[in-house]
Image (cartoon, rainbow over all chains, first blue to last red; front, side, top):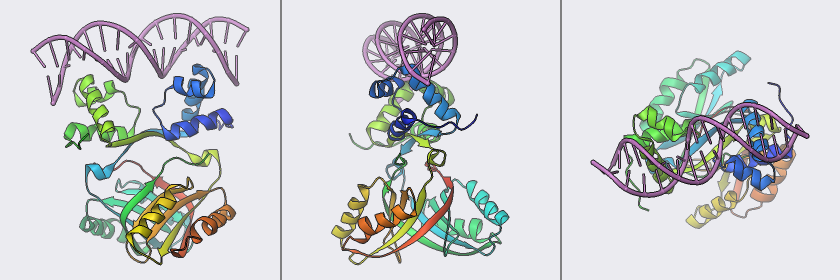
Length: 155
Length: 155
DNA sequence: ACTGAAAGGCAGCCGTT
DNA sequence: AACGGCTGCCTTTCAGT
């Protein structure tokens, strides 16, 4: 399963599926003026080689339940490779930690944490992040609203 | 097209489709021990009423091209309703601005901006954000790596 | 509100160039 | 590497409870 080079057809397919993952092979084939089986082949390879990680439904969570979202900025007091990996692995396991970024500059990591309310957020932060021995300081930015959250990269 | 109340079946469907948007009605029906046509009905309504915003393919962008990602934290010098909306609308139009959050505290907005490299990021920031008359200061945090980016909310 | 059956269309596979 | 045909399964619809 080596990494292939993508040609313009692959890129076009990725562009389309990033916007609408439920497009049929037939629709894509028609739009690119190629055969259906070529498109099916390409998509199979794109998935097999990990270019397409998953196809998911995006839920409008605000219609389902009310949420509390925060962006804790975390400073570690140890910057060894092992510690960085350990922190990231720790964060992986929590469904509430939806995003985790390693940053340059004053903070080491920024997280996006989604919880039912501010109380549960504080508890979560204290018990699951603050207690980690290699975590120094945490500064939380609280979200008032999200006006954009795109999953489609410019290709 | 009123908003419906979701029952446990709807929630279970959302849970599944958030994880794998290409699950078939048949698979979901089997897993919930309901008929296929009931599941098809529910999903049609969930989409029609906007609970499911879209179904998209998630692309492993690092395999496709190298990127530069930054999180500018933006302070406005005017906090009127109109200004806030204007800023958000401005951000909506840029494909490179993938996320836009309104925050409490020291900064008003945080963006996630994805560009080809640091130079184009600086240009973009200066020409498209810094030039806005109501933008005060901007502090950029640069991303080294992304270890988690989930799109599935805990339901 | 939920089920089951029937019809059409699509995906997946294979043979051909 | 790309195409077209075939088969089986899935989606979609509709009548029924």
